[in-house]
Image (cartoon, rainbow, N blue to C red; front, side):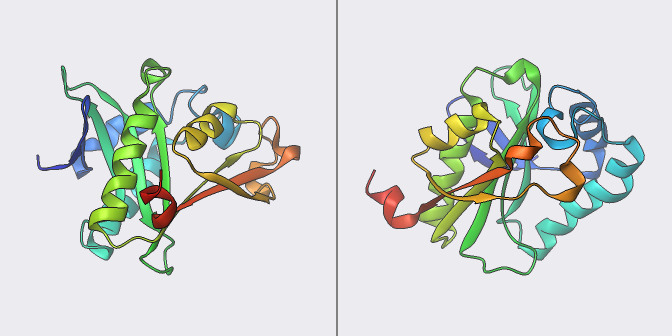
Length: 187
């Protein structure tokens, strides 16, 4: 399997049709889904019929440069979750979203920061990106701390999407962080 990106401890690769069980398992953990669905697992059929086909179609749409990437520990190969680096569906290719969803076993080990830093570097040096953004719920302090570690700037407060009103803390809305190529170069 071809590696998309490597860090000191992680290997990121494109998902394949054979990875459906990894995605189902990740999205079945209530703690992982806490700030996404209020802890409700994603139905396996939705992962199979909607999510994975959309992930695979994204590689075609963007020539493999952008999308959702499976993350594995280089030492032992354990699947730890995924990272995302992609533009909006019909948005400009030089403005991309950064994100991640990691298994609980990978929490608190610096993987989200490590993988995200490497993706920022790739975006700004190889992919012609000028702006990277990330969004999370206001109450998701773990993700907000990672965005700050990445030198991203809090740029906006955003409303909670209607489908997330059942999530704890949703009344506080969300936050958007951004970093430009110039800011990244000047760190």
